[in-house]
Image (tube, rainbow, N blue to C red; front, side, top):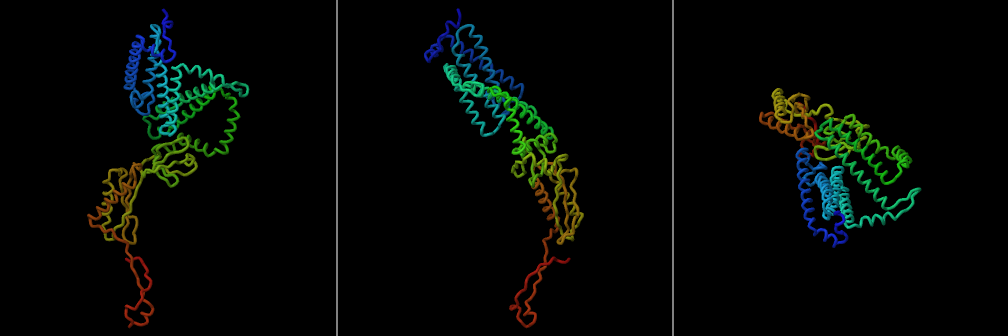
Amino acid sequence: MNPAASAPRLEGLDGWLTALTQPSALTELAALLACVLLAWLLARALSRTQHLKNDASILFGRRLVDGVLFPLLLLSLAYVMQTLLARLFPLALFKVAIPVLLALAVIRLSVKVLQVAFKDAPVVRVLERTVSWLAWALMVLWISGLLPIILDELDSIKWKVGGSMLSVRALLQGALTAGVVLLITLWISAAIESRLLRAATGSELSLRKAVSNASRAGLMFVGLLLALSSVGIDLTALSVLGGAIGVGVGFGLQKLASNYVSGFVMLAERSVRIGDNIRVDTFEGRITDIKARYTVVRAPSGRESIVPNEMFIINRIENLSLTDTRVLQSTVVSVGYDSDVAQVMELLIEAAAGRERVLADPKPGANLTNFGADGLEFTLNYWICDPENGQQNVRSQINLAILKSLREHHIDIPYPQRVIHTRASPAAEDNPDTPARTATPGPVTLAPTEK
């Protein structure tokens, strides 16, 4: 007996209820639960093998059911189980489960790919909700049997464009195909970027970033061409549009094009790299990311500057860590002329050498650099290798240690000294008998103290 011949009619709500009350429905439910358990076990085993369970993983995600692997495995196992059970008895539950699992897989895949490709962009939330509503709506129309009817009606709405006929159904199918192609392209580019940037640092990170940006741009371009071709657009007609875009880039978009080209040149030459400490246009900080159009520079204070890549090519840039991450710092100290010079230099060096971030090689050094108006001026030089952790904080620690050491050894730190000259009024000079209280003071002048 053919199972299809004895299959219950699944038309309307009564048909569905009748099919689900058949004894075979319990067998289908048990088989579906077995598929769920097997898919969960396989996904768990693969996640432990790959060690990729994190937010940036499309297949595994943060939790086991958060990634794409689990719904894809469940859909595949359910389809295989449906094929096997269809040879034994007519199916009802699997005809509902397959569309639901397919919609779940599509939603999970699109959400994870968009999250990885665009990270925290505001448009991601809107796209996620749009894909979810669209997938569930198509699933409901598929189960209810309305989808073929709606597609036939949309196919009947046609109009002529040039020498070809277009219908609403063809446009919708083309747009859906284009979305799938772009989604797969983003998935592949995200996987390539994750593999390239994994465990990369310094100059290697910058080079891999350049390869990642180039591969993503190339894949997006190919995906766009395939998407346009799937919609039915003749790509030969884009030659004129390409020429117009070229003219626009040459005139109106030359700055934008210059920034993109400069970004690839920077990453290829590695003149500046992620992690370098630079000074550009009076702004000093650490490079945290290099995009195709701009570079993000973060100052020790937490401020971030968005610098167009063109500035790194046409302007003078100070790279404080291009070949050497060590940075020289100095502080100037003034003491009294009667101080012991050798003792002062020794105390300055000890104050700097006692700090954790100060390098021992090259070691700190102190020099008598000037005979000032108020005292002897010493300059203390020392090196650090982590300017990204702040420079004022280590200078403040050394200054505090110097002040404490000089006070403990009773070494004078002189105040600025000045002599005030006062001039009596002309009337008091002509008449010495005039009381001093009637003299009006003249202007006050300041002059340096003569030693």
